[in-house]
Length: 88
Image 1: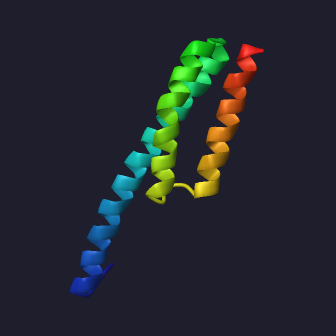
Image 2: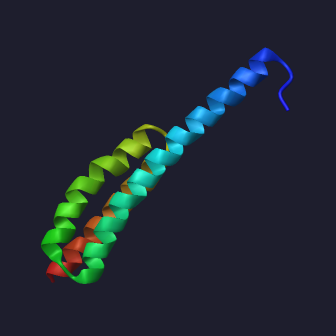
Image 3: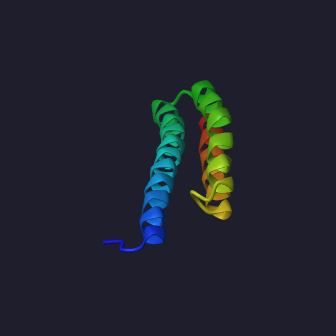
């Protein structure tokens, strides 16, 4: 339990930041899931559209520090490769 005023304030700040980060991570995962569902359904046009909307969301999460920049780039790259493979 926090004893000092500054420690209590930090506890409040951490809780607030955690809630924001959780929301952003959840939002990113939702967009990724939409792409994966379109890929699983075999619908290339829907998958492409979902990827177009997911990419900025993934990169925004990287910019905000939710995921590492390389992790975000890898996610986008692998999703794009899977969407491209549907066309073949």
